[in-house]
Image 1 (spheres, rainbow, N blue to C red):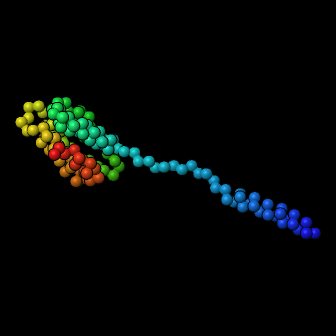
Image 2: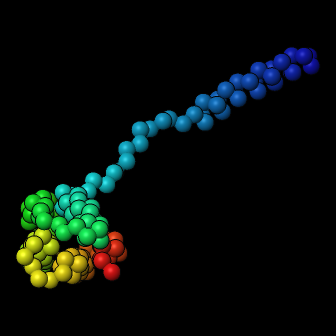
Image 3: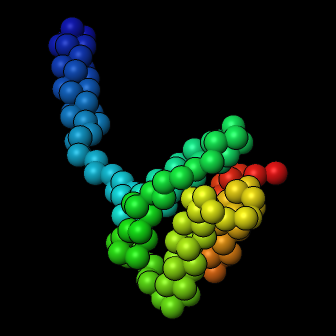
Amino acid sequence: MKVLILSMSLVFFVLSCKQVDKSLEIEKEEVVYDMYQPSEMANLMNEMYAQNLEVKQDILAGKIPTEFPLDFLKIHTAEMSEFKSRNETFQSFSKLFIESEKEIFNTESQIPVEERFNNMVNLCISCHQTECTGPISRIQKLIIK
């Protein structure tokens, strides 16, 4: 009788463990991440930063930049982030930016190239103070001291 009770208990224990294992199984669900996709304007701004960093290095090395990067003109047409818009302030600043950027490459200017470059950087900072303030500290690193 003890053997029968003991074997029934063992069978019951084994069966109950199998049920617990099945209830603990977790179904694997596919996780979909919402990855940030920068806008065309954000990509353009990053390209402009990289190119102006090269211009800064050239100026510090004594090289006078002579060729205005035509890609910068895309500032007037590049697609912006959904939460941004091309308002009047942006339009004004973007026109001034292009003018100040072109002035850096003006070989006939009597203004020192370092000053022309810093004018452009300060204009970028001024624009970013009105809308997208995040990159200001990065832009300030372009200033030639």
